[in-house]
Amino acid sequence: MVVLVAGASGGLGSVLARMLREQGATVYGTCRNPAALEGEYPFPFLAMDITDDDSVAAALAVVLEREGRIDAAVNCVNEMFIGSVAETSMPEVIGLYDTNVFGAMRLCRQLAPIMREQEGGGTIVIMSSLGGILAVPYMSSYTSAKFALEAFAEAFRHEVRNDNVRVSIMQPVAMHMERGDTGSHLRLVDGVREGSLSHRMLRQMAKDTAASKLTPQMVAQRIIGIIQSGEAPLRVPLDRARVLGKLKRFAPQAVLDKMVRGLVGLDRAS
Image 1 (spheres, rainbow, N blue to C red):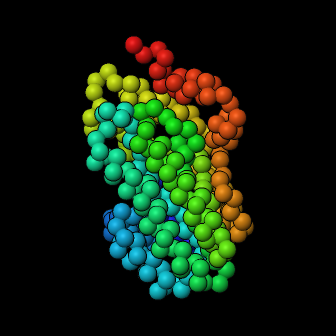
Image 2: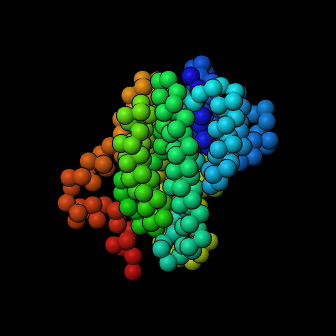
């Protein structure tokens, strides 16, 4: 089995690619600068900038030239930042959408004809999050991008399912990882002011990540199960996302509002 893991240089992508390799899959990881990672991983890296069509096409072409097929692809490329609508610049929003939404679109639209034409089709796994279920204040750019990503993935799934191309959306909550509470994976936008509630939201997110019982290994094993089974459910909520997904569907809006506002203490704010 040949698997492409986009964004395999850290976090979930690194864990997933290593586990796939240990289980006998032929794995190709992607990142923007593979030369900087030479010798650090038990699988090859290809250069791929998911915000560039030609770069995506070139990486897929290398895999096809070497292996003749791509059985599965997992998009772990993700950008996240915290900031109110007023604090966030339009270039920041556009950059996030280019990575989280348009990047996934670029990858899917180029994978679809490859998987359609090969025997057995293929599986595409798209990483969403709790942000694809609930719109969170001070994370409007991130959560709206995840909403858009889920709508795209669901529509795309209908388009390719008759061609034996399977599409699944993963919805994990914050995963506990052995790294700093904040960093490139969790940051404030440039325009955040002193005293902004965005700081409180950042602290809450860091706290939730540190306390999470969901690990990258758990998420990776679920993804591997989907790839190996050949059966891809539309959405796979993990941990608290299962409960919150049900609340979103059935709870009164007033209950949801109270829960979300309590997340960052909006009702306590002056």
